Length: 191
Image 1 (cartoon, helix red, strand yellow):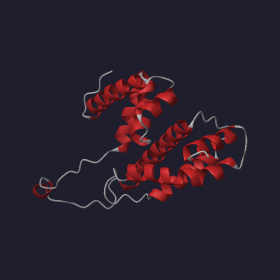
Image 2 (image 1 turned 90 degrees about the vertical axis):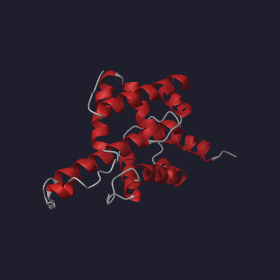
Image 3 (image 1 turned 135 degrees about the vertical axis):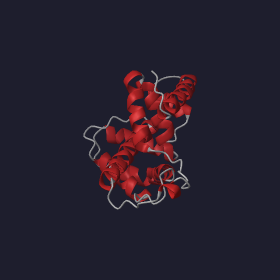
């Protein structure tokens, strides 16, 4: 009997073949993993973030429903695509919130008080997205490795399958991309 991974792969192949009911059969199998993935990303968000885990997973589902001709190569590829979708959703959400909040409802704090307010070190998805877009301009594979590791939580072996490369290459790309992103996000971008 096939396990959940094998069952998911079988359903993905049927979906590739045009079976319109395959997505509905796939969701119960991968739903919990998608929730864990969404929760993983949302816990990195600032306090008071209003997007919920379930809403993020449901938005991914809606986008999956909009796939005209899916071409899933594997279960890992499916989760890599879902991770990319989550990245886009979270970045778009952050941009919309930032656009709506600029200056509106700002609390005026005296300068002396402002100097004592701790600045939280949370992940700025908009800045990360900009850095990933810059990285993709000269090394698309490293950008995809970061997406799959950071947004999908995939391991090197799974990423290697999706990218059709070796685990060693994925590990090297991950190390180099992390170092480049750190430098870029700290304000000294280099290519």
